[in-house]
Image (cartoon, rainbow, N blue to C red; front, side, top):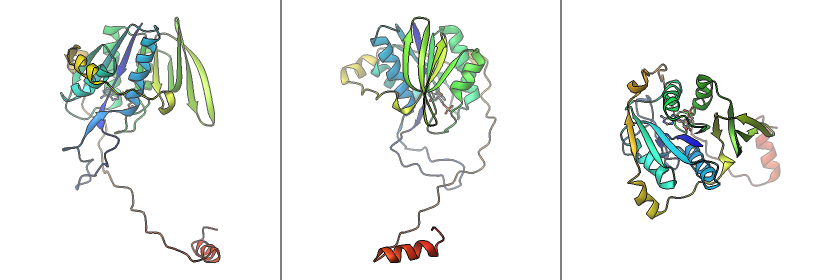
Length: 248
Ligand code: AMP
């Protein structure tokens, strides 16, 4: 079985993002970029399935600028076998990404496409669902456990107030939630080995996909600053202040 893992290059989750002075977006110049954290979890899960003998090949795919090669190399250093870069310099929207992924699925015939539940830059949480719809495949979203078994896979989903386990017939789309696993760090020898693993280069045109954005960002704003707190001398004073503010 082949597993395809789409990985997005995003601002590193440790970076304190800054809004551009003209409020058109966030500052990307000289900012550390990394693999979307949910996609690292997806790569890790694919590797675990391969280590358990349930999968033979893992293909990582990224749609983004030339520099997204680094993101693919991270996946290859973790343990994926090969990469596909679909080069595009602008912002990518979920529908266009899902259409490109559909084109790659038709060429690669994976049994599972394992995506992150959301990209931490656009917070869309749409690509996996759209891809499943375009392919007409079953989907298991927000996975906290994945158990592959022959021609089906059981996905335990994190839902409000509990867990739900669904059985999907393969091929299927799965999206990862935070508690699925803890991704491994790539070791130095594996980082070196990853440099020799193949990365195919494609363009959106190869899949006949129009990338022009359908959304226009009107405004991006910082969250309001928190007001400074005050110190109180006694519980009575605290209760008085809370009553004054109408909190109790
Ligand atoms: P989103 O729907 O944008 O929140 O993204 C959900 C998931 O789709 C991500 O975690 C990735 O697995 C995948 N994805 C989204 N955009 C891209 C991209 N440009 N390249 C590769 N994978 C992507």
